Image (cartoon, rainbow, N blue to C red; front, side, top):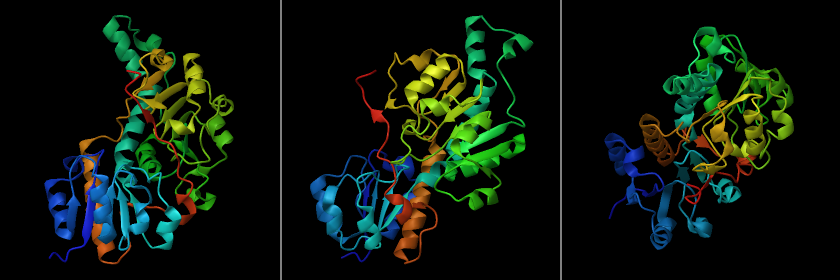
Length: 346
């Protein structure tokens, strides 16, 4: 009989090869007795049978109901979706010393890179210029730059100074920007120590030429960027939305963009796929990306590397250091939201 710890590996909606290189897959199977480990969802009866003796559960979300209370040996729940599970009793996990870890840090570099690209595309009207060139309606030299501006030396606002924002900050440094930040989950002293200026949200929106929305969705920040707050954005400013549409009044934002009040670059939408007739598709002031920022091969492989390293730490009885740990002060505030996925609107 194997003496290795039991590890339930139920990665669906991701696939095994999507997140694990050959090397990391070998390491994972060396660390424990892997149960399931297939791309299809693990059948509930098999999960229920395996859970009482399992020490680690790797999953994309907690879809196993109250079975948590039968997990007598469980030491960690590791989620590979990039977000913390929605339907999980965090208080029970904290009380019973069950770590809840998220692969969110794996997406920091790849999403930050995309954010910079979206910002530059909007500031310089790159997609619009490309479309006009292909249609034969291009405007040359100064005439083609009536609504463009340089990112260099601008005042930039960051809403949500977490994993992505810290990497984005490094990418923005060569541009000599002045960075303002709003994050109610972080103290002003910490933000100042990172080289950003903490400000109230309304002040940040008023003073920033380019705004990056990177806040993790929570119970209290739904539509935080309301119609009234969106109206504070500077004329011809740029709003880059890369966390979740949950934090923005998307309908109001669309109206402002169609009216050419400001520009938007967004990788996320309230419903995905985006309805083919959604009005934002018609705006030349919008740069649209189909939730592509994090789905890059190298970033997904970082998930597997993190999982293996932190499982090794947990099994050795030391704190995991790579993935994001669900903290007691914040875990009950994580959002109830993700984009609604539907095939009906295609």
